[in-house]
Image 1 (cartoon, rainbow, N blue to C red):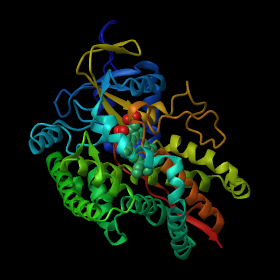
Image 2 (cartoon, rainbow, N blue to C red; image 1 turned 90 degrees about the vertical axis):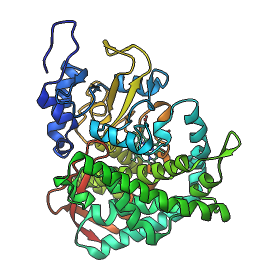
Image 3 (cartoon, helix red, strand yellow; image 1 turned 60 degrees about the vertical axis):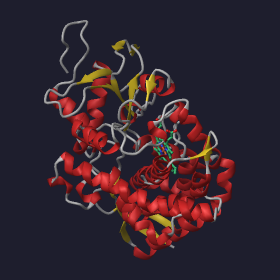
Image 4 (cartoon, protein in one colour; image 1 turned 180 degrees about the vertical axis):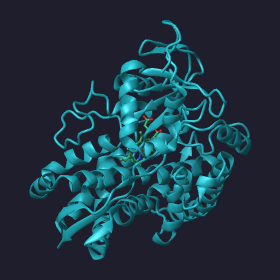
Length: 435
Ligand code: HEM
């Protein structure tokens, strides 16, 4: 970091700035956490410049209290004016050229502000509440048990990500959207191209050799495929509504009008995309913590009441959604730093959820952590719509696992995905004894 005079804003050094925006540094977790520790102390609201203009400048916000405050003040910190996920200038320009001026390739809940945001959110909010979710618990349990069965059959060694944590949340979210099982592989590929796109192994598309523009084109192609797919689904759900989320969206009206195509597609896409890589990452993280700690595994096998604590801590500890961006609606101040109208800010959930001022020994997985008011689901008007579903599906999966698995240990080195946005393990080799 270089301090340019006492009144000047702290600016990250070029190496620090690169580390914050480089997908590869999110695969090297400890180094990244070290960097955030330094920044929280020395420059909790720091400017990330781009002398070569490859990305617009932004403020990196790394303290828990500041991330919380920004998240809750949805009038001062907006989602719509600029992209809500960190993007390179080329990508932003490409999105604008495709959409006719909007920086958002997909218009969805996360890109809306008040008053439109609440109108859209209200359509499905009730569906995602615990009371309604009780109605889908049995279906989710059936999926969890079938997933664990496949793991057991593949044993005694298997990659947990490939067999369990990647496919299971995808099955769940596809089921609630009403997408038939035979189409799931296609959906997985599309969401990985959209959101795992920075990791060449995950996207399976040799992206390492691509320019940012080529990557953006690939993402745009994925959006188009999604749109074509969901246009068909909408027609079906209008003809024959079945009570799932897709039927609600297909038949919804706002101010008396049905949703237009772009908004409707955006709704499906955000649910399909937001619902699985995220839960997959926290599920794999929970398993990693248990595989490393046989005593904890034995304790929770004997006492299932420990499961909710494990699930919550896994969500904090992994922080699968690593950041979102906001834009200042007016001149303001964050953590003592003046912010100008129109400035772009990165609220970094990984940094906030590892802030020692809020979490004692934050790198330790502590299933008994209490309170555990983490920010992995965000806060304020955009707080994760699927948070009850995510917790529920993780708890049900671990119940099914604990019913069948007697012991578990690592069978190799786990590896993290290269991604600045949604991140987590891409492999978790396990050895286990099953019943
Ligand atoms: C562990 C799993 C998950 C994590 C860590 C996670 C995290 C997040 C975060 C950080 C946000 C933005 C919050 C903010 O801006 O304040 C968000 C929004 C959202 N999430 Fe999740 N999520 C998870 C699972 C799910 C699931 C299962 C679904 C549904 C299928 C879902 C649907 C959404 C939607 C629709 C939004 C946008 C809400 C809005 O803008 O109003 N998420 N999530």
